Structure formats: structure tokens, C-alpha cells
Length: 380
Image (cartoon, rainbow, N blue to C red; front, side):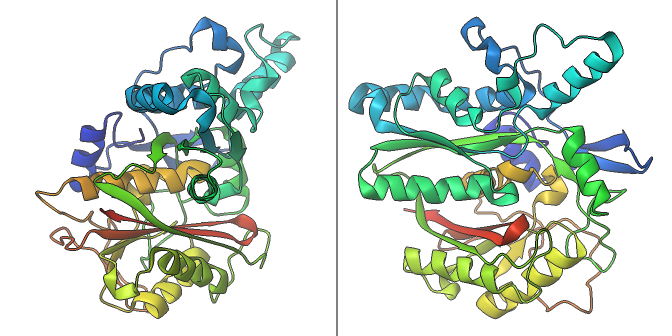
């Protein structure tokens, strides 16, 4: 669920149509600048009464995604037991919007709304909520490493399954639009006032989006599998990436090694591709070094926005949908103005008519503080 739609079929269709209608003007920031956001358009009903303390937009998004895998989770729970299913969710905002509204109400009315509960904005409660929603009692924790959060959740799930600590894992991410992150990125002068333009000479920054995406991971063979994961932490700077991308390259090569793949085996690389000056500069250099100028690649953030802590799961979800479309085998078009930055290496930004062959994709997520994650998935 994201700015492209609420169902898998709708998201895939609009992805392949390069549909940007879910990207909408946000309005005025504290600086009086404007920007564009990727907003979920679906109606999100309240949570059930026993979960009222967890009720916030972030968890409503997460609940809508969990509903789509609930039948499969129920079947596995009945087979292995609720205590053998882990829950690993990445987020960076949790229910901060509800906290913002509560403080605003306190200043305006002298009291916090009766419906507000601190747990709505507690980052660590996201996985706890998901576990309660699905009635699971296995290991559960929330990962919050900024924009790599939900990609790192897949790495954690991979380790838990490999170690035998669980038989299955609900893994993914959820993030919702809030004033804190919008104005925070604006303070960093990282927001674009218009639709973002990844890797273009005219790029002016990112668009923030919202959404949720979850998977049920098991050891049972499936048409699409998790092939390998890679992580690194270079700690180069609080918010800026290492210009040479050494940590990012380490994560990508670790994912390839984990999957026992060579760069030439990869059909498509989903780029982190934020459309900020420094990220696109760094990532293009890394892609050129690892994959060369032939491997198709692209950013989907021009279609759904940067969903922050949910971005890793969101973009793996898009890759999973593409790999499940075995008849057409289309790659998503890299949506931009087509004007290359002469300062960037020449990488193969995917056009509208490219196809995948073997069915191996790599997805990158890079975050503040030098947290780098790369995940490889592919056809079984």
C-alpha cells in the first residue's frame, strides 16, 4: 500500500504505467516553502476496540497491509504455533502525527484528546502492534535505522530463520506522513518543491511518501525467494553519505556474496535514488563500479515518494510484484526528465520497454549515519 494504490494488482498496474497521480502538493511548510508528497488515498478504518491504544494512521496503514497476508499467517500459525513466528517491522515515524495533534490540542484547548495514548507514537510499539493484530507470540521487535529500517528487518528475519529461532517471520515496514519529518527534511534543504527527478542534472531533492508493505517469510519454497542480504555501517556523517560510497558498495557486494551471485547475474537494481545531490552522486558511482553501464536500474521514488523507514520493504514489494508477473517480465521505467547529469557516471536508467530475463533483482537502502542495506530477491 502506497501512493500507487492499496491492492497488489493496482500497485503493479500503476507502477508499469509510471502513474504519478498519487503524488500531490503538500502545502506550506514552516519555512513557507512547498513540496510534493506520496499520499495513500485509500480509506483506513479505525482499529478494533482491543487495540485502541495503538490506533494511529501508521498502524492503520500497517493493519491494511497485514490484512493481505493474514490468511497465510493463520495457516502457518496453525501449523507451527504462534510462538514460532517472529515479527520484524521497520519504521521511522510510528504515530508521531497523533503526538503532533495532541500537543497542538494541548496548546489550543488546554488538554490532550482523550483518544491519545503515548503508545501511538512509540517507535518500538510498531512490531508489538503487528504481533497483537495477528495474534503472534514469537520474537518481535521494531527496527528504526532511518531510511534503511525495513530493509534491515529483512536481514534480521534472514538471521532468525537461519539460526532456527523461528519457523516463519512477518517482516516489512510502515511509515506515515507527519510534520516532523517533512519540516526536518526541509530544514536540511533536501525537499524538492516539485516532483522529484532522480539522477537528473535538474534534481532538486526528494519527495516524502507514506505506506506499508509486509511479507510472510518461511523456509517453504515459493515462486520468489530471498536470495541474499548485505549490511554495513560506515558512520561517515550524521546525514551525508560517504561520497565514494564505500559502505554502500560493501553492503551490495555482501548481498551478492550471500546469494552466491555475480553482478552479471542481476537483471535489475532498484536504486535508493532519492533525487538529492549527494545520494545520487554517491550511488551512481557505486553502481558503475559494481554493475557497470549495462545492468538496468532505476528509482521508484518518483512514483511513491521516499517512504523513509518503510522504503526498503516498499521497494522490495515492488520488485516482488514485478518478478511475479512472469508473462510480461517488464521492468519499471525510471521516471525523470531524461537530462543526464554530466558529473555522474553513465549508468543504465531503465526505459519503458526493458524486460527481465533470469529474474534476479537487487534493492538498495541507504540511511543517515551510514546505515547501508542491500537485499537480493529472485525467481526460485
